[in-house]
Image 1 (cartoon, rainbow, N blue to C red):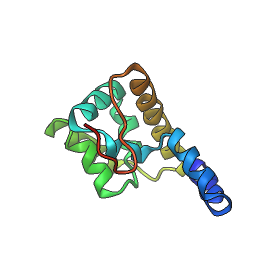
Image 2: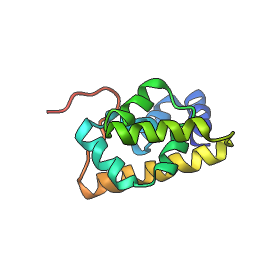
Image 3: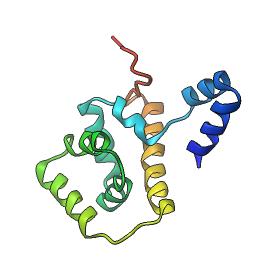
Image 4: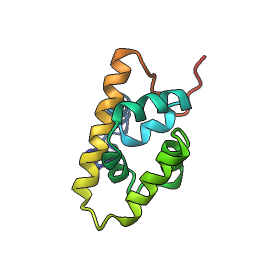
Length: 123
């Protein structure tokens, strides 16, 4: 839903779209978290069911970013959950991803993590 709005905005007003994107968080923003921050996020998620739903249909890079930040056993469990689960609606996947995005927002507001965007380097 957010992505469709952003695409429409980009087509009509690229500069405004850029400004809005800077204010929004997306599921892909977790790629800007380092391994320590990913572990904090994953521990805060706590619900492997939510995580397995959110990772359904995610690209390899994003899925591996999550899985490499957790124990091998937990990563295997989540992969198994993804394999045995039946079909999911895009809404179910979107809802699970929104839970994670909201946690990212909360953790950044707390100062626990720092979301790096647009490939910028930070020191």
